[in-house]
Length: 69
Image 1 (cartoon, rainbow, N blue to C red):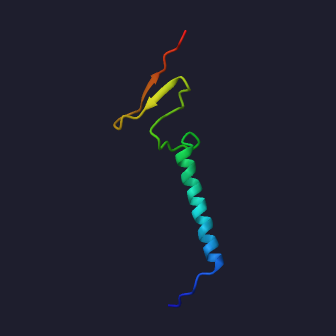
Image 2: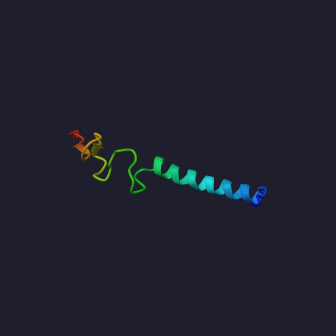
Image 3: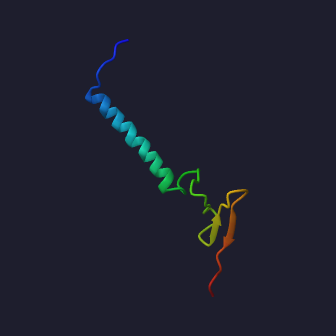
């Protein structure tokens, strides 16, 4: 089996793939409402006046924030 040395094109391709993977991970972690997967354990689809948390087992628990009159 012949092994060849890496060229600058190989290193550039590796760097490009690494940047793309880090970008995808950043979108999933930093913008959880942007993607369908919700890794933070919260759900914000009910609106800004609701607070939802995931207790770990079962469905998320959502509470409506009290209104100030």
